[in-house]
Image 1 (spheres, rainbow, N blue to C red):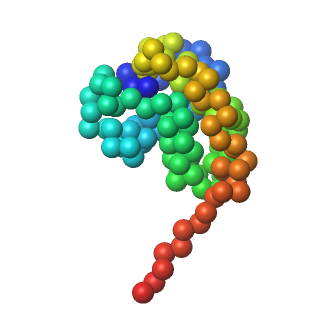
Image 2 (cartoon, one colour):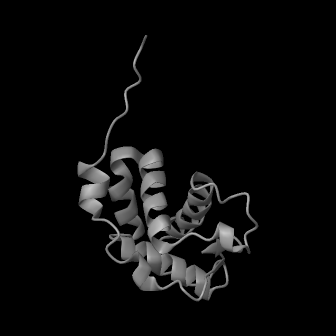
Length: 129
C-alpha cells in the first residue's frame, strides 16, 4: 500500500479517526521498516497487509497503551480484517494505492485483538543506574 492524500469527506463506514489512524500507521510502518525514504510510488515503499496490521497494532499501543483495543472498537475496528476494510475504502476513494498482489484477505486473522492488545501488552519500565 502507498498513500495518496489524507481522507476526504465522503461517506465512511468507520469513524473518521480510523481512516486518519490507518493512514498514519502506513507512514509509521514504512519508517519502522526503513521504507519511508523510497518514493511513494516505488516498490521499495510497499507495505503488505500483514505488515500494516502489525504496524497499526504497534502504533495503537504506542499512542493509546492499554486503551488501544477500546479506541479501535470505538472507531468500529474489531479485527485485523477491519484495518483491511479501512485500507480498501481508502483505495476505492483514491487516497491509497495498492499493487496487483494486494488483497483484502491479506488482513484476515493477522493477529487476535484480545491477545495482541491486552494479554501481550508490556509496560516498559526504564532501569535507573
